[in-house]
Image (tube, rainbow, N blue to C red; front, top):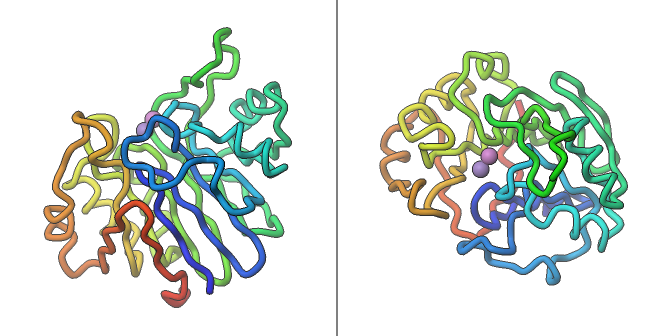
Length: 231
Ligand code: NI
Ligand code: MN
């Protein structure tokens, strides 16, 4: 059964019929992570939304040890390639049909630094992803502010993964507004409670979303089926 598993912070593993994808695998140093990078099942692709340490995380090591392809914005892909990874660069607005998913890279309003890039030459534009796996479309918003661009996704998303922790990204009120913009069937909060600065109560998010969508709060290690029906 195709499913999505939360690994804490913005990290998700998506298991399709034949492949396994991991997004923003920040495991080492993540106080909420439920797994260590070494104990993951076989991964086919590592998707990165941006280069901050809490997203790039263990991505390079996981990609190399699993011989998985790194999908990332062009500049961040270049950095991962310089570290020995197999990469597939993309950029905002582009879509590509991979064996593991149809992947569209969408905009996110955030910072472009790349952790570990001493030279600064790989500064990148952050992104979100709309993935289609086993007929279900999943929007991982990345680290972002609320933005009108989200309205372009209205009616195209079954499951939305949205940051709620405030300070570095949207907080609860803006995240609830984002859900109104996108109108997914199911919304899963992310990017909260990992650090003191992003501590919020997910129950407040559930209340703020109300009947707009089903809010599924996952604890690290929890899985949820992808079969929420497709648009
Ligand atoms: Ni960030
Ligand atoms: Mn972050």
